[in-house]
Amino acid sequence: MMSGGGYTSIDNQKVSGSVPAATGPDPAAVRFTDSNLQTFPPSETQGKISAVFRPPQDADDTFSRPGKGAKGSSDESGQATGWFSMFSVAAYKPYFDVDTSDVVERIRDSLFPFKDSFNEKTTDNPDLYGPFWICTTLIFVAAAIGTFVTYLAHKWQKKDWNYDINLITWSAGLFYGYVTVVPLGLYLILKYFSAPSGLVQLFCLYGYSLFVFIPASCLSIVPIEIFRWVIAGVAGFMSATFVAVNLRAHIVSSGERWFLIVAGIFLLQLALAVVLKLYFFTITVSSH
Image (cartoon, rainbow, N blue to C red; front, side, top):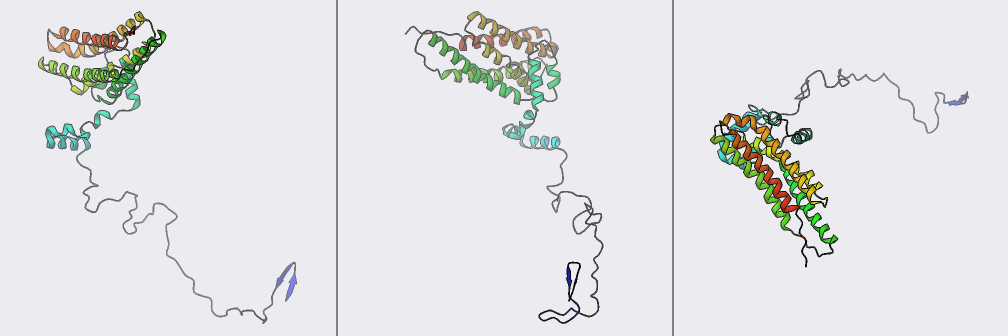
């Protein structure tokens, strides 16, 4: 045994308890075939894994193979089911396929009633998402604000106040009914005068025309009667102008009676504003 430089080495000698080193020819070196694991994806096809990464497909390609197009497939299914297609969720899916930016832009257009570009922007993609939520929001806002101003009026005069649940019921019936029945009636009238318009586009136009009544309802909390009338009048005028201006260019083609149709549209919107003011924001405090 020798030591030097801080290391200890054992000479080639027999030491008690040690295992002798193996002697003999060097073992044969194991050689592996060349691999391309360092590259991804592999450059060669191995089994069912192709050189280009793709998701797995069905064996018979029945489900993986695209049809003739999403639009064509929906048309074929609609023709196959006939009128029953209107009761399926898929039939209404395209009308809810809008982005937040689209809805915000359409709401902004409804607040500038003298611009007649709304119909042009929504011709190819009318939606029901915005009208549904605008109408639903207006129902709860009108009922809530109407209830609150009634509560304040009773408290200021130190009178007992009872919550009227019928406000939310009448609000839902008024706005849902208006935004459904009026466009449907206008659709039939325009079709009679050979100036047909898309039914969904009319729903879209009337739905967005109601947005201005939401801030108007919030402003009606001010306990000044003349101020509430002014707010209702301005909101009704803006909403009526928005609908009439955007339909005027289309209705002109219906003949000499186009003016009567536009005037009727305008007056109906004003009537809605008056009903909103009288029913929700006309406060009467009982003397009992």
